[in-house]
Image (cartoon, rainbow, N blue to C red):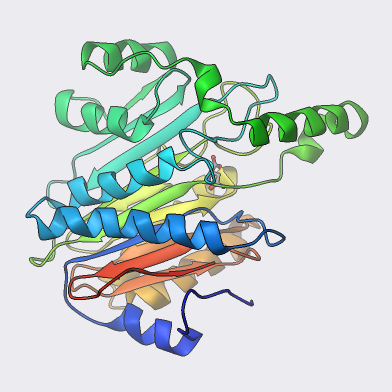
Length: 320
Ligand code: ASP
């Protein structure tokens, strides 16, 4: 798999940077569906900015969950990525968003699914985590809860970029000829994992879901264990790829269990993606952060935007 690396960092150098121990550190992904035919420069810049935003929170004494959330918000707000603003559209042409977060110290977690009027669903997911006894809230109930928490109504049309609208028009035409299921292949999601200096880990994931999905379809992203998982005794992970396949193998949990069994996060990420392919014929990718500060990433798609930031580095390093 050929990758574009920002700067002059080779694959081997990246591997040793991933294997480096010690937090604080942040790792992010911008989805396993990164288009191989576009100039990666702005994507790499967006990925770096997110990782740096997360690290800044850790360096200021914020929690791993605050850091992962901060990185996720940057990615949700960047229209290049399929989450928040710029999300892929459903077959009806609207943005319908899923997100979840999990704290590895307490195993607290929260998710929202199929929300349409929230600019940053990861913030709504965090409110579910912190402010309710629930783990997952969906649709109108999740939106009503977000209002109660002071999250303002954000018109769906503002989440839709011109690029996604044009893409939808094209797919909509194609769907009339080839059938809707044949055009539901494109991927994209964002995710972030953080580890602090004391080995506390957390993960956040957010998505517009698969392109041209049915309205009401929930994927892996809002589900703990599938899209997002974190446990200080194992690791934190955020998945991307075909949600239906990721759900079947519980990919985020699988990667964390591998770390708990003694694998490095780098190898655990590779093995989780292999599991996805072998057992569920799925394409996708994952990022992993271990409590000892080692990190991992892997994907079996042509590209996955990703970045890492560590304390002491002048800037984050990105690859796609
Ligand atoms: N996992 C996301 C979903 O199925 C999509 C993606 O990551 O590309 O909703």
